[in-house]
Image (cartoon, rainbow, N blue to C red):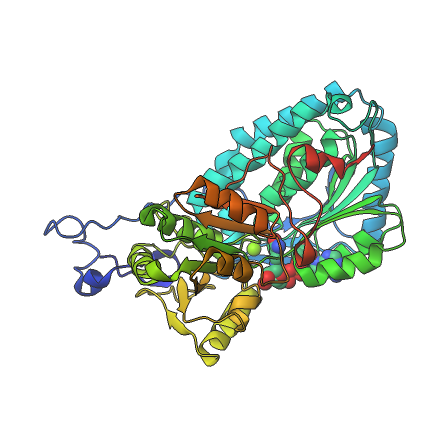
Length: 509
Ligand code: NAI
Ligand code: MG
């Protein structure tokens, strides 16, 4: 059993049998009793990180007008990766002006079939450079390479492919005979899926003929900047895509800018509400994709092994930094003990540690503030009387880490049942009847997603009609496809991303 410590070596997640394990050198070679994975780190050689990055405006990288920079770090090691330009009001002016000029002179007048070619080209380059993107994403965000490689990057490419196909077919999409683009889109994205959220924002906007000013999150700017480089490589006309790095102030300046016609935001409900106030009365279009507190409902007839995998995927995928995470497990009382026991056994096999190791299941928490928030809510869970459990788990000494955690004995009034934790923390509640499951699942101000696990198709349909959530997964969880619209309502926001519905936000039909 590997018992390594330190940011790179420390991965763990062992069952009770691992306590007296042999040393790392002997693991797996000696007695035949240990079947642990040897370290399998992905090389970071493929990525070249510059010491400093400028803003991407009008097809070129340039420093911020103020010359100000901010650092981005590797959350697994706290190692500074690069200094990144911080865009101020003058840069936002420049970015929006570049997008406007490109909209009027290049991208708007371009025949849609030509626009499609650029989107295809970007998608192909993303595929060609996928390993580079995956490694960079894991370095800057802390997510396991297994996920950046198999989920984030392929889905980002899929979004460009899918929307490339729409570009020249919009007049046949049910939006009327000649839907028009909206103009300049100001897009602000979060840090949990940095490249994928950039793709979700840019691809439909560009396919519909709009130009974009994108503001990545301050802790994860690097893949958006690499995507800007891909836009150059694809020969995208200057100004069609602009990337302005910075923090909340930069985002606020962008959404308030009078030259922006359409605002798209993914992030916290709190900031979403501020943006809604800023945009109110301006005539700007707005879509908001905000938080969630999804119920993952497990009935007594569900196949337990599959349900446990779905619970794990629902809340421990991406360290639980997922707006649609299945953070509230609602399990039918008659099977609750059995399901929780299987879940604990399964969590004992998860490996936490170096995000670049191909065997890592749980990576680093994205930032210190996010770690503080997870710790605070977990403390509240204990203080309010829920029972906290984690598998034996050795956390690396440096970096931001939190073990997979399960709370049982949770009641609906507990903060951990009501507030979005956005971390690897599951709150378990029980129900007796399907009606009670519906009532408890809907007892949240959010309405983004939900899951249902049962053997009965009729029960899935019955429940799906009653759950107030934009997305309901049945016998699966966290499945995404560019053709399938995603989004919520109530405190989870409004508007859809993906599919034909997602295009509507970027068209004046
Ligand atoms: P945040 O909402 O502050 O950040 C998201 C993006 O908005 C970032 O690019 C940020 O720079 C930008 N931003 C911040 N303030 C802004 C403003 N006033 N105007 C325009 N843009 C602004 O989220 P944060 O602080 O990183 O995370 C806090 C909590 O929000 C998390 O713990 C989680 O619960 C939730 N969250 C939800 C996300 C989702 O996908 N639904 C994504 C990120 C966070
Ligand atoms: Mg970072």
